[in-house]
Amino acid sequence: MFNTCSRALVHPKLFYKHFCINSCFRASNILRKTFLKTNVNIFFSTMTEKRESVVVNASKNKPRQAKDDKKEEEIEVDPRLYYENRSKYILEQKKKGINPYPHKFERTITIPEFIKTYKDLENGEHLETVITKLTGRIMRVSASGNKLRFFDIVGDGGKIQVLANYTFHDHNKSDFIETYDKIKRGDIVGLTGFPGKSKKGELSIFPKEAIVLSSCLHMLPMKYGLKDTEIRYRQRYLDLLINESTRNTFITRTKIINFLRNFLNEQGFLEVETPTMNIVAGGASAKPFITHHNDLDLNLYLRIATELPLKMLIVGGLDKVYEIGKVFRNEGIDNTHNPEFTSCEFYWAYADFFDLIKWSEDFFSQLVYHIFGTYTISYNKDGMDKDPIEIDFTPPYPRVSLIEELEKLTNTKLEEPFDSPETVEKMIKIIKENKIEMPNPPTAAKILDQLASHFIENLYINKPFFIIEHPQIMCPLAKFHRKKSGLTERLEMFICGKEVLNAYTELNDPFHQKETFSFQQKDKDMGDMEAFQCDDAYCTSLEYGLPPTGGLGLGIDRIAMFLTNKNSIKDVILFPTMRPEKK
Image (cartoon, rainbow, N blue to C red; front, side, top):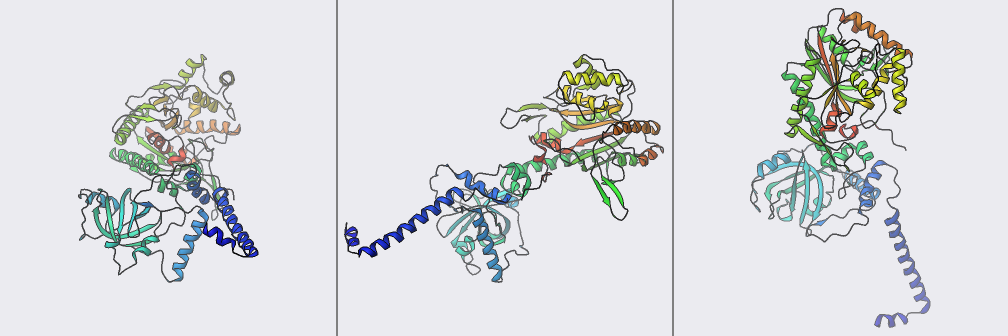
């Protein structure tokens, strides 16, 4: 009442002017806050800004949580402003002659080692005479007043708490508040301090000194995670930082490769390297990438398989060889195909089709047991929102003869030769009757492959199985079947309808090999750009004598998909092929 009356004593003109100025100021503030709340993250032009907007968008409509004793660091709303402020701070440090990116920090212990060494300390116990130096990335920042700061620091797959107490800080080296105010989420820091446990029993390092080794200039989407697949694939480093499951996926992938390498080494195989660029793209039915060597003025092909040079090594007397490496195929991109992928091929002198089946059953059953401690795994083949299925890797695995099964399922007799006009006409009729997509071009080999894909590849869902005894026209490098005319001793292994393995008794007859290459030329003349190319150098090597040999190829990426429960090959390749971002 007093204030109301006293305001009336002001001269009317002065009062009106004062009222207008304050009203305008308040209105502008309301408009500015409303704009920030509704628009600040709607527009973004880079993947980084899109990623950072996850924090703001995900926080909408979330109920407020009760305040904790440890107050979480408030997040700036605008990611652009956050980046600008952090960048400005770094540049100011440089102007002052301070190096914000130190060359070295002498670490004496890793976080996993710290956990292993001090995990058994009593609650509230401090080892103040034990000084350690560790490094890591800050993933949580909170405080309880000005003299107590809490951080989570991660590194090498481990996480501990940093409990920065004003009492323990070395004030001769730096100011406590200044030191910890500048540490933000995502920063990489070096800490010098002693181990201990909080009163609640949380293992911690109590720092005497903290140094920022590398600042994270961008906001991290910590509270609500990172689920946008586009960002996860393009910025895999961010995916690894935020999502522990991604880290575990690639750890499992490495375990698969290590197990495979050890499995082959223990059987006496020799790991070798063969050329990535070749004059002829051979060893598989696929369209290659082409590059040019300037000095030789020669077009070269990135390899689509490692088969032919590995078999040349068998000719040279290396009886068991293998290679794990990248191959490149200029084909479509989908959930099970990436233009650059990892394969393993091995060649085994004096082995055959039946040895390869036994090897496959042994390898897959032992691999699954090595990783999971059981032969049965769960797999969400229809996506994570659907119920998983159980896949049992206990050997032996079913074997399905391709032609015999097609004839049974379609009630159609397919006569030799399988590329005759009459047989091709029968197969085309089956395709039309079942409304199956016609391959382009409609060669006999491609039609057979399409029919197998439609009728056979999904026969067994809960167990791996083999499709065996393919026609010769489908596999020009495989040896003819010793008992069944027109067929080969070839096998493919499928899991949930996806091929993970291809193997056969190798064709070692140089005359027959040239003949099968000539048949492939007919398909190429029909427009099949993926048909096998004739490799004269390989044919010459066969003339020196290739012993009876079995060969096998594995798709590492697809195996990793099944053993990490992923439906997209992009989830098991660290840097999958992506379209460039639109500017």
